[in-house]
Length: 202
Image (cartoon, rainbow, N blue to C red; front, side, top):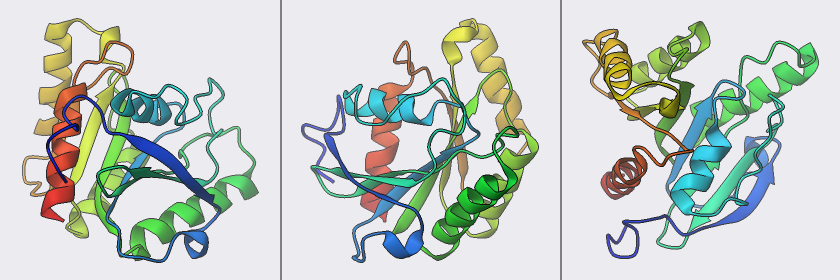
Protein backbone atom coordinates (compact mmCIF):
# COMPACT_ATOMS: atom_id res chain seq x y z
CA UNK A 1 0.00 0.00 0.00
CA UNK A 2 1.40 3.34 -1.02
CA UNK A 3 2.23 5.74 1.80
CA UNK A 4 1.38 8.87 -0.17
CA UNK A 5 -2.22 10.13 0.07
CA UNK A 6 -2.83 7.61 2.84
CA UNK A 7 -1.36 9.42 5.83
CA UNK A 8 -4.40 11.52 6.69
CA UNK A 9 -7.19 9.16 5.70
CA UNK A 10 -7.92 5.90 3.93
CA UNK A 11 -9.93 6.58 0.81
CA UNK A 12 -12.66 3.95 0.88
CA UNK A 13 -15.96 3.08 -0.79
CA UNK A 14 -18.71 0.65 0.16
CA UNK A 15 -18.40 -2.58 -1.84
CA UNK A 16 -21.08 -4.99 -0.64
CA UNK A 17 -22.94 -6.48 2.32
CA UNK A 18 -22.79 -10.24 2.67
CA UNK A 19 -25.03 -12.32 4.95
CA UNK A 20 -22.41 -15.08 5.06
CA UNK A 21 -18.96 -16.09 3.88
CA UNK A 22 -20.39 -17.64 0.71
CA UNK A 23 -21.55 -14.23 -0.51
CA UNK A 24 -18.17 -12.55 0.01
CA UNK A 25 -16.12 -11.69 -3.10
CA UNK A 26 -13.96 -14.53 -4.36
CA UNK A 27 -10.54 -13.09 -5.04
CA UNK A 28 -7.18 -12.62 -3.31
CA UNK A 29 -7.53 -8.99 -2.20
CA UNK A 30 -6.25 -8.69 1.41
CA UNK A 31 -8.74 -7.76 4.12
CA UNK A 32 -8.56 -6.42 7.67
CA UNK A 33 -11.66 -7.10 9.74
CA UNK A 34 -13.13 -4.91 12.49
CA UNK A 35 -14.86 -6.75 15.32
CA UNK A 36 -16.22 -5.82 18.73
CA UNK A 37 -19.14 -5.84 21.09
CA UNK A 38 -22.34 -4.19 19.93
CA UNK A 39 -22.13 -0.42 20.42
CA UNK A 40 -18.35 -0.43 20.90
CA UNK A 41 -18.11 2.05 18.03
CA UNK A 42 -16.80 0.05 15.06
CA UNK A 43 -18.73 2.05 12.48
CA UNK A 44 -17.58 5.35 13.99
CA UNK A 45 -13.97 4.17 13.87
CA UNK A 46 -14.28 3.29 10.18
CA UNK A 47 -15.85 6.65 9.40
CA UNK A 48 -13.09 8.45 11.30
CA UNK A 49 -10.14 6.83 9.53
CA UNK A 50 -11.73 7.21 6.09
CA UNK A 51 -12.86 10.80 6.66
CA UNK A 52 -16.34 9.81 5.50
CA UNK A 53 -19.06 10.14 8.13
CA UNK A 54 -21.51 8.30 5.90
CA UNK A 55 -19.32 5.32 4.97
CA UNK A 56 -20.53 2.98 7.70
CA UNK A 57 -23.97 3.36 9.22
CA UNK A 58 -23.77 4.56 12.82
CA UNK A 59 -26.62 3.76 15.18
CA UNK A 60 -27.18 4.18 18.89
CA UNK A 61 -29.16 0.94 18.74
CA UNK A 62 -26.82 -2.00 19.55
CA UNK A 63 -26.86 -4.89 17.11
CA UNK A 64 -27.75 -2.83 14.05
CA UNK A 65 -24.90 -4.24 11.94
CA UNK A 66 -26.12 -7.72 11.01
CA UNK A 67 -24.14 -8.33 7.83
CA UNK A 68 -20.51 -8.57 6.78
CA UNK A 69 -19.97 -5.09 5.31
CA UNK A 70 -17.00 -4.79 2.95
CA UNK A 71 -15.30 -1.54 1.94
CA UNK A 72 -12.73 -1.21 -0.85
CA UNK A 73 -9.66 0.99 -0.36
CA UNK A 74 -8.52 3.11 -3.30
CA UNK A 75 -4.93 2.04 -2.64
CA UNK A 76 -5.79 -1.66 -2.52
CA UNK A 77 -7.11 -3.92 0.19
CA UNK A 78 -10.45 -3.99 1.99
CA UNK A 79 -11.85 -3.21 5.42
CA UNK A 80 -14.59 -5.49 6.74
CA UNK A 81 -17.11 -4.40 9.38
CA UNK A 82 -18.27 -7.54 11.20
CA UNK A 83 -21.57 -7.83 13.09
CA UNK A 84 -21.19 -6.88 16.75
CA UNK A 85 -21.39 -9.52 19.44
CA UNK A 86 -22.78 -9.62 22.96
CA UNK A 87 -26.10 -7.81 22.45
CA UNK A 88 -28.37 -9.72 24.83
CA UNK A 89 -31.64 -8.10 23.69
CA UNK A 90 -31.32 -9.48 20.17
CA UNK A 91 -33.30 -12.64 19.55
CA UNK A 92 -31.43 -15.88 20.11
CA UNK A 93 -31.90 -16.97 16.51
CA UNK A 94 -30.59 -13.63 15.22
CA UNK A 95 -27.58 -13.80 17.54
CA UNK A 96 -26.75 -17.31 16.38
CA UNK A 97 -27.05 -16.29 12.72
CA UNK A 98 -24.72 -13.30 13.15
CA UNK A 99 -22.23 -15.31 15.18
CA UNK A 100 -22.18 -18.11 12.64
CA UNK A 101 -21.41 -15.63 9.86
CA UNK A 102 -18.60 -14.07 11.91
CA UNK A 103 -17.13 -17.45 12.90
CA UNK A 104 -17.18 -18.68 9.31
CA UNK A 105 -15.51 -15.51 8.07
CA UNK A 106 -12.79 -15.47 10.71
CA UNK A 107 -12.04 -19.18 10.47
CA UNK A 108 -12.16 -19.70 6.71
CA UNK A 109 -11.57 -16.38 4.93
CA UNK A 110 -8.20 -16.73 3.17
CA UNK A 111 -8.15 -12.98 2.43
CA UNK A 112 -8.02 -12.10 6.15
CA UNK A 113 -4.68 -10.54 7.11
CA UNK A 114 -5.38 -8.98 10.51
CA UNK A 115 -8.08 -8.26 13.06
CA UNK A 116 -8.99 -5.00 14.78
CA UNK A 117 -11.07 -5.43 17.94
CA UNK A 118 -12.88 -2.30 19.13
CA UNK A 119 -13.62 -2.01 22.84
CA UNK A 120 -15.01 0.69 25.12
CA UNK A 121 -11.98 1.87 27.08
CA UNK A 122 -14.15 2.09 30.20
CA UNK A 123 -15.22 -1.57 29.95
CA UNK A 124 -12.46 -3.44 28.09
CA UNK A 125 -11.63 -7.11 27.92
CA UNK A 126 -15.08 -8.56 28.52
CA UNK A 127 -15.37 -12.39 28.31
CA UNK A 128 -16.33 -12.41 24.61
CA UNK A 129 -13.43 -10.03 23.87
CA UNK A 130 -11.07 -12.40 25.66
CA UNK A 131 -12.35 -15.38 23.68
CA UNK A 132 -11.74 -13.58 20.41
CA UNK A 133 -8.24 -12.49 21.43
CA UNK A 134 -7.36 -16.03 22.51
CA UNK A 135 -8.66 -17.42 19.22
CA UNK A 136 -6.68 -14.86 17.19
CA UNK A 137 -3.51 -15.64 19.16
CA UNK A 138 -3.95 -19.37 18.60
CA UNK A 139 -4.54 -18.66 14.90
CA UNK A 140 -1.39 -16.51 14.74
CA UNK A 141 -3.49 -13.63 13.40
CA UNK A 142 -2.10 -10.11 14.00
CA UNK A 143 -4.59 -8.32 16.24
CA UNK A 144 -4.88 -4.66 17.20
CA UNK A 145 -7.20 -3.70 20.04
CA UNK A 146 -8.64 -0.20 19.92
CA UNK A 147 -9.63 1.11 23.34
CA UNK A 148 -12.26 3.42 21.89
CA UNK A 149 -14.12 6.33 23.48
CA UNK A 150 -10.86 7.46 25.09
CA UNK A 151 -12.28 10.99 25.26
CA UNK A 152 -14.37 9.75 28.20
CA UNK A 153 -11.20 9.49 30.30
CA UNK A 154 -8.37 11.83 31.22
CA UNK A 155 -5.04 11.31 29.45
CA UNK A 156 -3.49 9.72 32.54
CA UNK A 157 -6.40 7.30 32.89
CA UNK A 158 -6.15 6.45 29.20
CA UNK A 159 -2.51 5.46 29.74
CA UNK A 160 -3.45 3.42 32.80
CA UNK A 161 -6.20 1.59 30.92
CA UNK A 162 -3.87 0.83 28.01
CA UNK A 163 -1.12 -0.42 30.31
CA UNK A 164 -3.54 -2.57 32.30
CA UNK A 165 -4.90 -4.13 29.15
CA UNK A 166 -1.49 -4.98 27.69
CA UNK A 167 -0.32 -6.36 31.04
CA UNK A 168 -3.18 -8.86 30.89
CA UNK A 169 -1.50 -10.47 27.85
CA UNK A 170 2.22 -10.50 28.69
CA UNK A 171 3.05 -13.48 26.49
CA UNK A 172 1.09 -12.50 23.39
CA UNK A 173 3.07 -12.48 20.15
CA UNK A 174 0.38 -11.09 17.87
CA UNK A 175 -1.46 -8.54 20.01
CA UNK A 176 -1.08 -4.78 20.29
CA UNK A 177 -3.36 -2.03 21.60
CA UNK A 178 -4.03 1.65 21.04
CA UNK A 179 -6.13 4.28 22.82
CA UNK A 180 -8.59 5.75 20.33
CA UNK A 181 -11.36 8.32 20.12
CA UNK A 182 -13.56 8.49 17.06
CA UNK A 183 -14.99 11.72 18.48
CA UNK A 184 -11.69 13.54 19.09
CA UNK A 185 -9.50 11.76 16.53
CA UNK A 186 -7.13 10.43 19.20
CA UNK A 187 -5.02 7.63 17.71
CA UNK A 188 -6.36 8.20 14.20
CA UNK A 189 -3.03 8.60 12.43
CA UNK A 190 -1.50 5.78 14.48
CA UNK A 191 -4.31 3.44 13.45
CA UNK A 192 -3.98 4.37 9.78
CA UNK A 193 -0.21 3.75 9.94
CA UNK A 194 -0.77 0.35 11.61
CA UNK A 195 -3.31 -0.67 8.98
CA UNK A 196 -0.94 0.34 6.17
CA UNK A 197 1.79 -1.75 7.77
CA UNK A 198 -0.48 -4.77 8.19
CA UNK A 199 -1.58 -4.61 4.55
CA UNK A 200 2.03 -4.29 3.38
CA UNK A 201 3.29 -7.25 5.39
CA UNK A 202 0.37 -9.43 4.29
